[in-house]
Image (tube, rainbow, N blue to C red):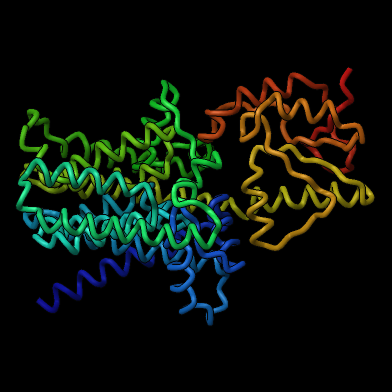
Amino acid sequence: MLAERTQIIAFFALIFGVYGMMIPFEHTADAYGYAAAMGRGELWSPHHLLYQPWTLALSQLWLWTGVEPIFLYSLMNSLAMVLSLLVVYVLLPQRIDRRWWIVVVAFCFAALRFGTENETYAWPLFFSLWGTERLMNGKGFLAAFLLAVAVLFHQIHLFWCLALCVYAWRTGRWQFKWFYLGLLASAAFVVYVYSELAVRQGYSLWMYATHDAQEGLVDFRWGPKAIALSLINLVRSFVQVHASTLALFDTPWILVFVLAGLLMGSGLLVGIKPRAFQKAMWNRPFVWVLLFQFAFAVFSQGNAEFMVMIPVLLVLEWAQQYRRQTHWPIVALGLGLALWNGATLLASKKLQASSFVVDRMSDLRQIDAQMESKPFVYVARDKVLLDNYMDYKKISIPNLEIWKAPGYGAQREEVNKVLLENHRNIPIFIDAKQVVGRQTRADWLGADRYNNWISDWAWDPSPIAGLKGWWVLRRKP
């Protein structure tokens, strides 16, 4: 027994070590934003209330190492993802080789990305999984409390709670009476926490709890594009399919991807055994959670962040249905995912010697130096990333104004109106006259509007010496 426990500890420690090595050099806009807020001591964000104080408190244990704070924040998410995998290990049927199923989950791209980044999704996933495990073992009151903690870590997990309510109602109303009582008590606790913080921030309870939606930071729309993005990100939650990945196909990395593709293909082809639709599946909790979470992901424009739960839930359900006598397909699938997604992240780390955001800061400083203390504007497709990076790094360029580009957070008509009223003739810079292709979700949603806006105006190559690829607005003809 001791030897088996030692092996399990070593196994999860190894995954934690791999996650630590995969932490990126260049982070997302949200990651820099959270890090900047924590650096200023701003602890509370309504959409993910507990994330910043919890992460900041944990990282204090490691500040003596002198490591950059955002790396420590990301490492704490690695810990959360490994703890989530440990709960998945407990939930998986013992008749299967659970460690290889954990490899499948651990090396899905969603787990790798959000387990190695300063984002808000790993900790609530852990508490929701732990709460579900407790519920399935008859600890309803504790389960409800853990699920409430998950909601306080990120509001999206309210839908996990609702899904479990449906599951509990279908499978035995009074069997889960302590779960219902716990939910009522936990709901009161959550409302109390939000009420106290709302009063301190000068908001009403409703305005504070829905702050991000009220500020337009959460995009809710239904339509074909939302469905298409959701299906794309469903695939990308397992394997990274991105312009940066495709670029590696012209390098020796292609051999790794070919091998990974063969392993994943053979594992899926043999491992998935078609089964008739079973009525009993509606009496399993993860089916309901999967449906609720995916529906909300579609409703929120296919948001990739909300897909982090999908691989976990699908694997937990698939494992219950797995009836193959051999387990090598799961081994092949796990190795294939590890090769494909590991190669993608390792290659991107190698290529990040030249960081986009660092290069952009260098260009803006160069413009600022040659503008001789005159103000100028940069219309950016990634304003939030640049603002948050400058905030985190405490970079100041006093003469610079960064505007959101049309299609990327701004409306075409609003920007055009401001440009027409630019009586001071402040120089307006852009770094692309046309967005070609659809490399990101933002491009899918906004590239056409950006390109249409560009066509409203005439642009000249930047007069700044040595600055290629930049353009400056010519006066309206």
